[in-house]
Image 1 (cartoon, rainbow, N blue to C red):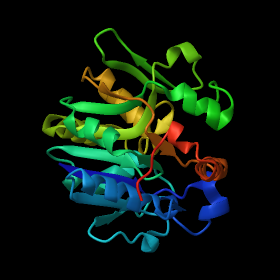
Image 2: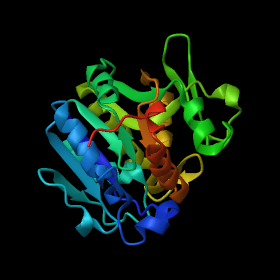
Image 3: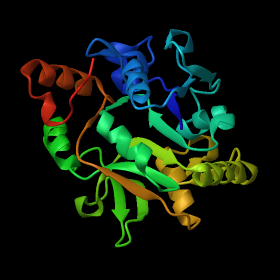
Length: 261
C-alpha cells in the first residue's frame, strides 16, 4: 500500500494564512497539515508516501517522503498533479487531498476496503456543514448512490440537497485493477482531449477529480463509497481554519474530529 498526497495548489481561499505557503504546510494542532497526514499514514502501516508539490514547492519539507513537482500547477488541476506521479499509480494506492485531516479509523476503513475504486464518503456530513456554514445547502456537490451501493453521480455543483447521499471527503482508494483503470482513463482522455474541452465544459488539463471519477463511472466502472461518520476536517478557507482553531479552543471539536499530536 502506498499513498499519494496532492499538494500542488495555491489555496487561494486561504490566502490570509498561505500567501507564500502551500496550504498543506499550514500549521494546525502544532504541526503542518501534511505532517499530520503523513503521521496518520505511518501509524497505520503506510510507509511509501509521495507528495505532489507545486506552489512554493521548496517549502514542503516532510522527511521520509518522495516529492514530485507539477510545473504547471498554476494552470492545471488535481488530476494533472496526480499524474505527475504516474509511475506511483500501480498496485494498492490511497490518494488524499493536502487540505484535509482524517482520523486513524477513517484511514483503516480505507485500507480495508476491497473496492477496486473506492472514495471515502461521510454519511453524517450535514452535522459538520451546520457547524461550518450554518446551513446544508452551501458549497455542496452531488453524490448519488444506488441500491447496489455504487456511486452513480458525483461532483455536480449546488444540487438539491436530496441529491446528496453523502459528502465526498477527498480520499480515494485504488486496488491494482483500480490503478490500471485510473491510468487508462487519464491517458485515453489525454490522447483525445489534450488542449480541448473534456468534462463539464472544462479543458482536459483543468478537470476536477470529481469530473474524473464521473468519467470512470460513465465508462461503466464501479466506484464504491467507503462509508465513515465524521472523523475528518477540511481547510478550504480562512474561515475554516479560524473556526476549527476556535472549536478546538472551546473543547468541542471532538464532536467532529479527534486529533492526535
